[in-house]
Image 1 (cartoon, rainbow, N blue to C red):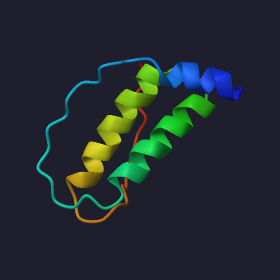
Image 2 (cartoon, helix red, strand yellow):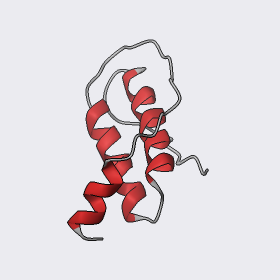
Image 3 (spheres, rainbow, N blue to C red):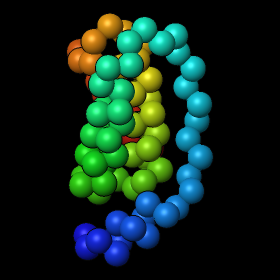
Image 4 (cartoon, rainbow, N blue to C red):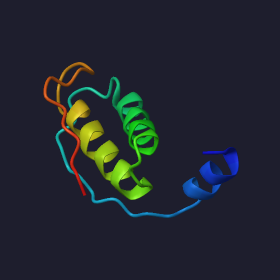
Length: 77
């Protein structure tokens, strides 16, 4: 994937579902979000699926103490 494809890909507006959780600790939420986006895109997933998973797993991170998830699972589209 060249840089033009990445820019065009990220210029899309895709609404993600809101995931409401009680925030305990925000440590690592942005890292988890970015990691999910990158993981998805480098493994053939589209931006929508990658974003939904990124939102879901970042929400799980903020709902607990610490940044590590024990049983993180990718949600298939």
